[in-house]
Length: 290
Image (tube, rainbow, N blue to C red):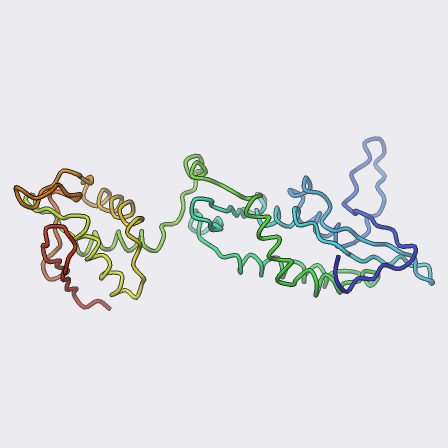
């Protein structure tokens, strides 16, 4: 319940939703505009999650009915964040990476968004609702209490469950995910720093050292080593049609190493000193980049 709410004697608690058409008669009672009916009409696809608000109704001495939204239904508002098919808007919580993604109709891809942006969206909807209410509606909770951070955080937490999607989502979705920052840099790195050479060997360690400096030159924090293999493996396969091997030897008696056969770093672009793929004091020099 909103902290500014004080129930008056005789108040009736109601769950207002848009009335359904009468299947027998064409007559339909004029609909009252309340916060619940406003949101329910705006987001009909969320009706399965219940009434948007618990509302208190009481009669004023002048005979008018006063309505106050006293409690917000977090299930309904979490469903709102999922979007609307008629508006071509969709949001998911991608569990493998614990982040929210939204569908961008301009690029036809799912792009990363933040919980702060989603909280702002909810806050603006509540504000819009308050502005469009008639005079018999108490809007204090809409304007203040329900827009408080702790309330919006509860909705975001509920949305992580309601909108959860795993890796199988993009296997069945016709729309791909937008390449992430390091995926884009890995593609650029492959195109500008690497080149084919039939006799060359590029180890994963050498590639990671050079890519880390490449990221630094772009003002981007480097990717962690665990995620690097998958990102760079995909970028090199796309650019050079080469797969990652596990049986490479830099010297006849050296231990086997992971890397790519037939690939090297372009001279003048990047150089990592050959340390037998042991990391060590590898040295890298990058061309100045704007």
